Length: 217
Image (tube, helix red, strand yellow):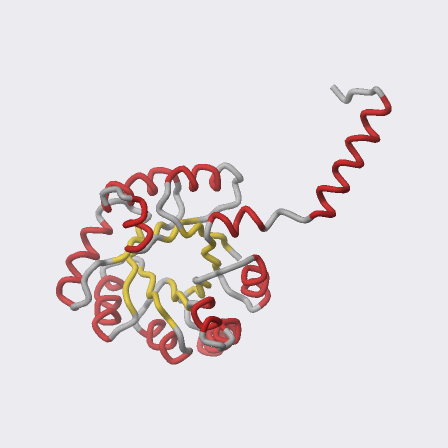
């Protein structure tokens, strides 16, 4: 499963990319607003940091304007993926951009039916929102499993991009359910590595090694 980082903060991305484990980035209007920077400048800066896909979302909701915005975003850098809402106009836009060779990420998916329509529209990625379903007392991971089964059954090439991830368990479960990608907030990404027994064991090893008075170098 590929790892994308869900942020528009370039400092957070520098630290994440330094691990060598990050495959791409997702952004949205809320994250851009939080950064306080110019939208196009942020996307261009992020694209300069990675060869992986960088999702940049359109701001409009009508078909004609979304097509225009999508082309503008795609022109920022070759690795831009145009993010579109899961609406009828969004799916029409997805079809048009796909036909022009522009990759798309159809977002705000909450049902397998929506994911099916997005795949038929040619979406490169579908973004089911796990955490938001959990907030309503539903099982977000069940949706991941349904989409995975549906896509495999019908040989759709659209990749399942697990989004709205709230914790490390979501990451693990998304991988076990067969998601192609998990887009992870920096805080959750950093928490993936930690475990108190790892820290305890390392401290013991360091103490024992220091007692030998030896050096490998």
